[in-house]
Length: 279
Image 1: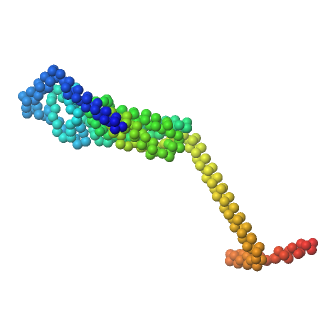
Image 2: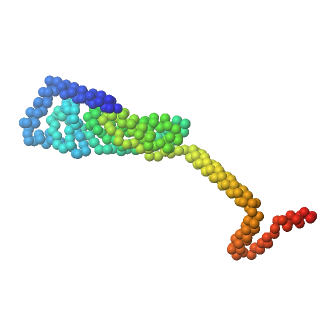
Image 3: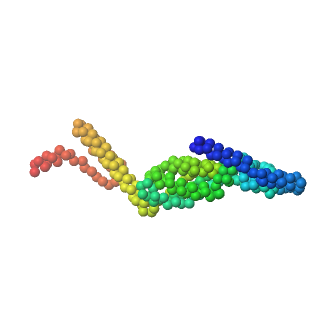
């Protein structure tokens, strides 16, 4: 990228150098004639020669259709020669625009609608005027195609979970493509990803099924832990017969504290066994 920028800068310097020395004899004659007219009509001509650009603007001057200097003028006051010079104002402020919703087919063959926003600014006024007819409009079109190309290599899961990575990929691709136009892409953001209604219902059903399966697993684990605890409790009670009687009393105490009309008569199991043996 750095080498690309150096090559572009050197090409701009060569272009400007050619413009400087390529006015020709007739061109220099017209420039001298225009300068003499300024002197003769002074101070009236000063109103035609003095121009002002704002702090956020730069002026690219054309002399007989060529760029005489590799540096744009401004901000503030600068001078031009009438009849031979013209200039184009370039806004250096950051510009933002929305990428219209794009119907994109992802890598796993899912159709989604994605939109975004791009922030960019002009960092080289001469390139933005001399190398492209409309830098802003060209950047807008390129952003749409870049969004399609980048998202076409991602599957749906990556598109939903890795928006930041996709934004950085788009920013790098746009910045590299628009560098010859004098455009610096500062930020790219994915605003919204719209899925088809059928896919939304399918994903909701899948998520619900996963939650139900997880709940069943948790309930089964609870049952297993409870059965283990009951087994250990039964082993403790089996070792001490008096422990069962204490458990009876504790159960009666719990029932009595609820203030109900239930009456329970504890009946020893041994007595029932002897009664059943007699039969």
